[in-house]
Structure formats: C-alpha cells, structure tokens
Image 1 (cartoon, rainbow, N blue to C red):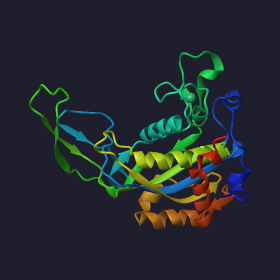
Image 2 (tube, rainbow, N blue to C red):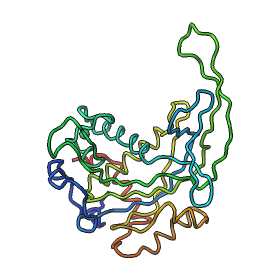
Image 3 (spheres, rainbow, N blue to C red):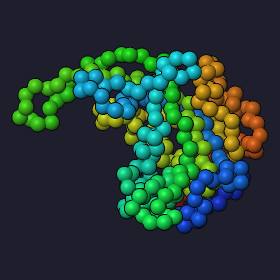
Image 4 (cartoon, helix red, strand yellow):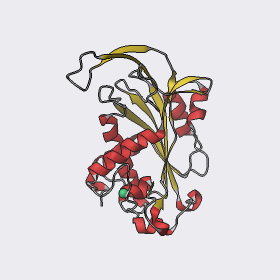
Length: 277
Ligand SMILES: [Zn+2]
C-alpha cells in the first residue's frame, strides 16, 4: 500500500521533540502547514459521558444547547485522553503517562503536555492535534435507566439503586480534526489510534463501553473552513452535509483525499510499521 502519490507521502517523516521545543508558543498554521480530517463518529454501544459525578442517585450524560437544540456533548478532551492512552500502549512508551506527560516522547510531540516540575523551555509542548468537541446530530433525550450498583464490599448487603441517562447506540457526531505542522508519523499515528480507541470505547464505565466507528469523509491539505456548528445548523442529513463540504473546499485547501485515495491512506495507517519509524 503506497501513499507516495498523495500529499501525505510528501510530508516530513516525523519530528523530533527537540525540534518542536525550539519553537515554543503558537505554531503558524499558514507557514507550517495543517491537515484537516472530517468524518462522522457513530456510537455502536451505549455510553455515559459525565463531566462530573453529581449526585449518587442520578448520573446524567453531558448535554449542550447548540445550533438550536439540546444535544449530547462529548468533550474533545475526553476523546484525547483515550487516544493518548492507546498511543502510549501501542508505541510501548513506559516513561510517559496520561496524568504525567514526559514532554520527551513522540506522543507528547503530537498531543502536547505540561510538566510543571521541569525547568526552562522544555517543560511544556503545544498539542498539534486540534479537536472540536463532539456534539450529536440527534436531540438529547432525558431517558432515565434504572440500574443497580452492587456494593464493592461483599459483606455489605444492600445494592444501591440509581438512575442514569445514557447516549444510545446510533448517535452520530460530526468529527473535525486538524493536525498542525503534520508529519507522516502524525497522520498515521492519529488514524491508527483513533481506530483502536473506537474499538475499546470511550464510556466512563466498562459496562457502558461506548464503542464507536469513524466514517472518514475527506482529508484536506490545508485549513478547511468547516465547523461542527456549520454542519449541525444546516439541519440536513449528516453524510450529505459533510460530503457537501468535501465537494467545495475553498482556499487555502490545496488537495483533497476522498474515495479510493482516502481508503488507501486509512489502510496505510492501519499498518503500524508504515509510520512508526
Ligand atoms: Zn511523553
């Protein structure tokens, strides 16, 4: 599988963290380049995305009033946490964790991090992966499910009844991602880890796994002017709206990968050895 004919094939192989640390602060997207990926994420099993535990008796998925209605709200930060955990495991990086980024490995090089204990210029690195929050096409429904939590302590008798509001399977989210100053490693590692994370699930609890699938629509070379708000406020069928954006990209987009070319890139990314070194 080759991607050499696409713009991704012409990118730098990878970046050293030491190179990235030489230019701290904001990266200039026009000068350093950006790749925009758009797709649709669909939940395949029920999930609970809570931003805080709240009362013991009721746990409710995050919701947001957005583009004219109440919708399920899946924080990009939570997606990024799962993605980071997958990448650290897949690349067998042991000195770095989700809670304490090392600011020294290729995962920190892409996803960024901050180590307040480090001295000088090498204590923080910008994330070059820019994600928009995932906000559902479907309207939020307050649908309490009654569940019973078994006590952790087997000596205690009464299980605690509680209720929760979950995101049902089939809920769809526009998924818009930008990678700044992209390398082949960045594109490959992101697409690969996204697929694994989809299979592992994003829910807060193992019982509510929140498995997902991602249907990629297009990858643009450049800053494609598309936002979750644009897509959702049109109110049409999500796939058609996303396709419409892929048909009519405006400058500064210079290339688009769709259809077979896009499939080739995804297949290329699925083989770790293609981008790992
Ligand atoms: Zn690290």
